[in-house]
Image (cartoon, rainbow, N blue to C red; front, side, top):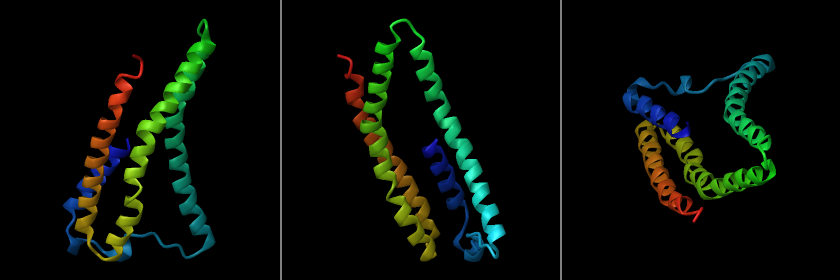
Length: 143
């Protein structure tokens, strides 16, 4: 999901020219506490929906596995595998993409919008390569 949104953002940024971007319209400014509250609620609502849809399958899986015969054994296996995947894949992917949170605002401040697409594309490529590299131990984890 994250890679798809990064690629689509990079595509949109690549298609816009530096002359077409108005820096004053890139950010949302609020003039009152009420308007600020509405802006924050709009972001909060959609982020909460995304997190709910992201976590719902995992909760459903744990509930389903817990009701199987000998469910405690399978529940422990699922928990251990999710922990292993979080350590080996997700934490590394988060680490490689977290640099974008410092690089992209600098590009926006310097009005170098073409660098945003380059940084996002490089981050997607490096993260994908590293995740594929670190997923090799997962293939042999059961042996």
